[in-house]
Image (cartoon, rainbow, N blue to C red; front, side, top):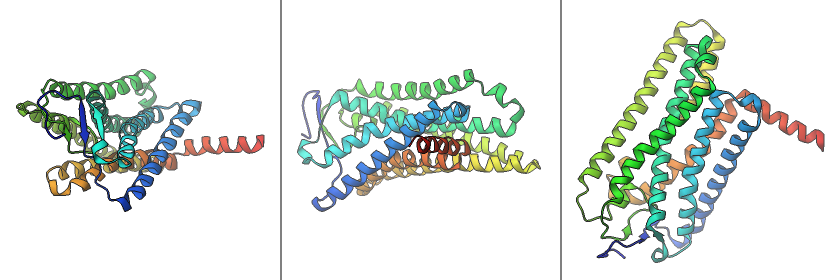
Length: 312
């Protein structure tokens, strides 16, 4: 299925190249990881929405991160799991499914940056302008930030995929385990210079704004903490900001390793594995770390378990 003279709507995915002995351990590992991501993120999202005490900007913004993790993992992991169990020749995907998968995959990556940026802004206001926090971080502001984060991803990825789907296809083999923009435009025999330029520009702009905003935000937070004599403020800043920064660095590291490995074809299988970890690791760590460091979440969980014990 390598070449085709027409715009075929059925493609073959290369998938993970796993041996018979390693197939089932990898399948079980990915399945358990996906189940954990589902339970952890659905659980933390339901908890935040159901508990009135957690209806604070920080937690409502965090819900966006959980929804994004659920979306990104649900479009990737089930497909990878299904393909592991079938021969390479049967790893087929329809064009429309491929486009949707590519769109959601890039939305996931973009949203991971934009949402952590607005969460950093929330921490900046809470620590550097605590007296004005309630006036700045209103319900309307939370909605604006949420719509802005999702809207930015939708527009950027929409243009990215829009340039690609206009291309005529002359190949049907996707040398990857899932569909993304690069995999789609590589199916074309047309000139993809514009696609490459926009893709590079899109990545550079996103990373520049993401890294730049994090550096600027945390620089101001650090200055505020160093000049403040309040131990409670510094303790609050350390707890919330260290968590946020740790999550950001995990996401950034896995993403950068994935991009770098694209330049080394000999590490194709390693790149595929890192591509999965880019979804699984943040999706697993986000709810756990936020849950562990948040006294409010601890309190809500304790109340739920205590109430169930009383009923029994």
